[in-house]
Length: 196
Image (cartoon, rainbow, N blue to C red; front, side, top):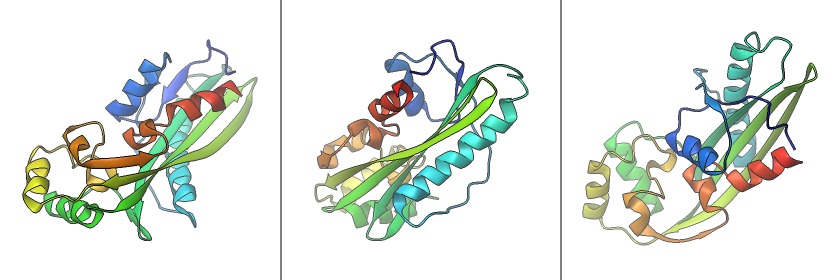
């Protein structure tokens, strides 16, 4: 298990990831990455891991001087929505959000969250990469229902243009896998990885 005294830095501005870590009892500070992300990888899981790595590595580089000679841990995460060979990130505007949600209506898609853990311990840097996948199925959604949801503004800062934990929850038919992964952080898998 990672030593409880080792400072943890979350390389994400997501309030949902922050909340999940807090609920799990972690003590940490938040330092969002400002890196310009580049999509690399052959599979959705690899792409999500790579995006998480870019964020974690950016923050690791920024803070290492602050922790000179000390142990510390940086956690990066990135969530993507994947459907029919296409990666759906955060929508640029309301029209793109509508198009994404219309495409996903009455269908099953996958949500991948990549995790990058960078630990400096006893002067050595160790990196752990992994991801979690959850299948999500929507009910059929009418256009006016989509427009009402989009008007809330909830869609614009989320991959795939929806949040499972907000007003869009009424359109979720079923999920197979980790619910928290869809929220943005597979907290149980992260805990088990840190424990190991």
